Image (cartoon, rainbow, N blue to C red; front, side, top):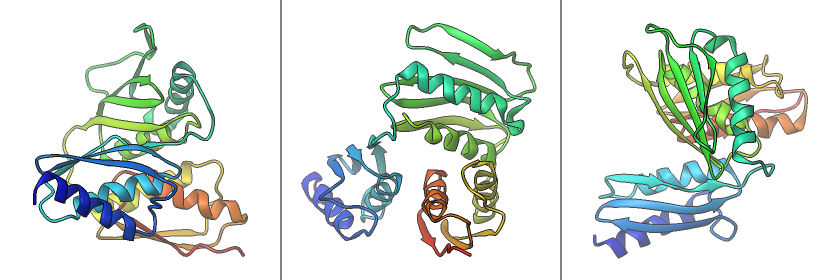
Length: 239
């Protein structure tokens, strides 16, 4: 297919996807060779994630450059987003042995926690509502959790996760399921004690009960925030 045909095929795939609403979600499709570039803004994280996978599933597409933004829950300045994220990462016990450095919009660095050679490290900056995560972590679970923290900041519009896992780990359904359990337990707005999360081929099924109706949607969003989730089958219910 030529570039025009690739773009047409991607748009057609998104039209058929239940998580992407072409009449609401403003997604532009461009192609450079067999690389698809997605731009625009969507209302839900699910639309962003599925648009990416719709493009990848088109035959002949080799890669997707996903630049789609999610409409923020709250308007926040870059430094305010940065401060919220740094406080969240600093306060999570999972990251207590990680160095943490932020760089504000003026390029000024602040060391929140001093680095040591054997520790992992976070280098954070925010530009135009896009959170940039750089540095190195010790597991895929930590990489995923750090990205979710970026999405949880109300003003965040996108998260560019460039954290390296050292030593490298092979991804799997088991790795993803572990991360989802950690994410759901870390979300202070969800009572996830009776929530079960199963993964098969990176597709997630949520079962169990939560005490409040709004937590059903919050739990689903947490899955979509987690890197690697391809689909979410949300079967959560109320007691």
